[in-house]
Amino acid sequence: MLPVNINVCSDGLRQRTLFLDRASSLFLSIQYGSMKTILFSLSLLITFAVSAQKTYVPTEENLKARQEFQDDKFGIFLHWGLYSMLATGEWTMTNQNLNYKEYAKLAGGFYPSQFNAAEWVAAIKASGAKYICFTTRHHEGFSMFDSRYTDYDIVDATPFRRDVVKELADECHKQGIRLHFYYSHIDWYREDCPWGRTGRGTGRPDSKGNWDTYYHFMNNQLMELLTNYGPVGAIWFDGVWDQDGNPEFDWQLDEQYALIHRLQPSCLIGNNHHQVPFPGEDIQIFERDLPGENKSGLSGQDISRLPLETCETMNGMWGYKITDQNYKSSASLIHYLVKAAGKNANLLMNIGPQPDGALPETALQRLREVGEWMKQYGETIYGTRGGLVAPHDWGVTTQKENTLYVHILNYPDKELALPLQGRKVKKAVVYKDRSAVRYLRSRDGIVLQLPEVPAGPDYVIELTLD
Image 1 (spheres, rainbow, N blue to C red):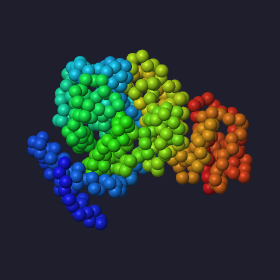
Image 2 (cartoon, rainbow, N blue to C red):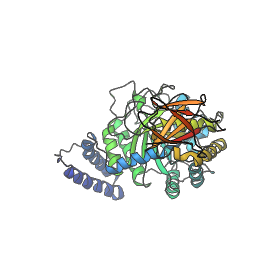
Image 3 (cartoon, one colour):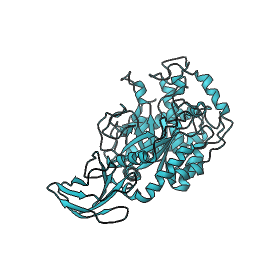
Image 4 (cartoon, helix red, strand yellow):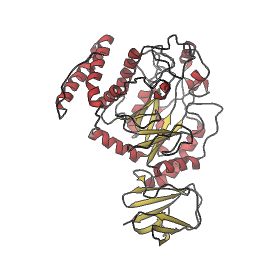
């Protein structure tokens, strides 16, 4: 990367102008230039972007996107790649120390004849989810989109020869679902990817790799994802934890984040590194845990002021595993969604599509069941923030302005005390049928006199506060 010195004006105008000039040159080089020219132009672009990233100030578009992300509350994660063909989960390549050249031969038989983007998006939309996060490239190194920077992708390496990311993006835009892209920072296939604590037994010849070429490869692919598929809601990174035994490893995230924010200012950045968010990140991710919990051992980090998201599997695995039929009940999924909202977080619920391109039938059934609940109770989830009453064993609260939704997930005794921090209640009703709920005022708030609870995973009482 060539260093370029520039004095930044106080209002940033000169820097932005020069950056746009370089960006324009870069896009022209992509259209008309050689690969060498493209890499050189990309180096210049990143050099100009990095100085702004170190003092990252989100744009108005970005801040608006953050609010919309928090309002959406519910998304579906899709882990799909060559690993689905082995039907043993997405980590099989490293868990079984499969040779990278032999593993790559799976691509020759990958033909997901049942893949239908319109059906996927329609089923997910019917669940009440507002966005999809799709694995464009997982740790196995296979790109699920048409990339000019590798032949190891779904268009060039498989007989299917269709860009599923393009079809999914087009359908998401058509049906009004936001699309996020998962992108792995590590690669068990590429020889230039430096080894971390995983993927060490795949037969790649050089443990040091070549970080410079691999870093350029990643950024070139990110440019493709952010320029060829329309508006992207977020880039969801994963894999920084792979170098946790080498804390001095420089991922050069500042430059990478700056590139993303410049290409699409409203695109959010999240990184599943299991730490407090780094500068330049727009959302904080928790894996298999609600914020403030650490049952899985991956989420002990402090909670930031950024928008929050927790990701969880619908059964036990992220990628398709034929023996894993241990699907969570629809009530459990609804509980997790409600608890996430009560902790001011989104829920990103995962499905592992089958190798033939269909979504598992049990997963589709769960989507339908959650969707039926969301049709009735979505108002108590969408657009809310964590309520002024903290989560308890009995449940959580969500809130919109002066409306507090009390979600009773574990029915207590006939009375439920709610500390309201000095707020007064004007009205209390059962959300479902608007019937009145009696309550007594207490020194700290009110005590609800609960009626008999009907069947269902969540009993919601709506309070109107002064």
